[in-house]
Length: 359
Image (cartoon, rainbow, N blue to C red; front, side, top):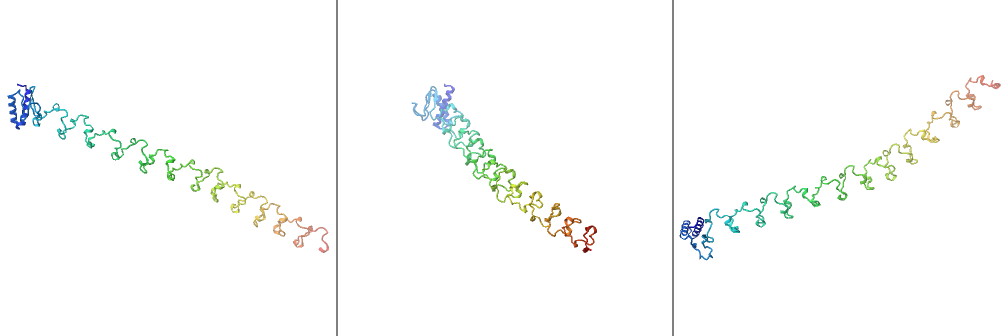
């Protein structure tokens, strides 16, 4: 009598064989049991089997006390749930057709077992990739396009030095705050591009002005003060004719040397400003004295000589009383008409001068 293990193997084998032959589970079990009891040590051929030479694919028999089951005789119905474990499956025996759709989950796949050849093209979408797992090495060169970059995510650190070229900068995008101090050189500025509004007040120094660059049109009216002019630097040729007006001349700065001979006319002299010191000796001629303007005060004492008095112009009113002395009367010029009546007294008559004719 075989042991229990041998019994079980043989019994299952017989059941499988008879199931294929008769199609009825009850007949299969009874037939297999009867056959086993009748010939427990004999080699038995399954119904429909070929010869026992070992070449048939459906051969069953007894080898070393064990029942040999023919190839293909055990189907799904004969297998108990969970009866086929890893040790029962031959290496490489489970192919794609053996695996039900969706049956291979994450726990079934060994770590690192899914390589590039196992993944269908286009099968890895965003939901399959864990956050932070697409490293630089995973991205092919030139494959990060504009659409892949979120707005505002290209920071300074992401841009290689020297890679922001002119074509990358939007017009008017470079504001004052973007320009480092003292970085704008002369060659960076187009000719004629610096307007008045671009220059800070007080920043055009002498060194910035080209020689002869300050023309008349560049100078604001009344902008040239005395402090701006070096002594002796303004030559006659620098001043336009008729442009040195009274307000341009500092008080007291028109010296004798500045006045051309014969150019101080009557209109240039303020009334009452030709003083005695201004008149050269002997230069006030008769023509210079207005008629009737040589008053008594103007004549120095003793300076009206006989020659200065026109003939017949010393009238009685001009002679102070008692001032016609004997010396002033020419001999023979006191005529009878000159002597007031009753004024020839005895004292006035010289001795011996009253002749008979005077009596």
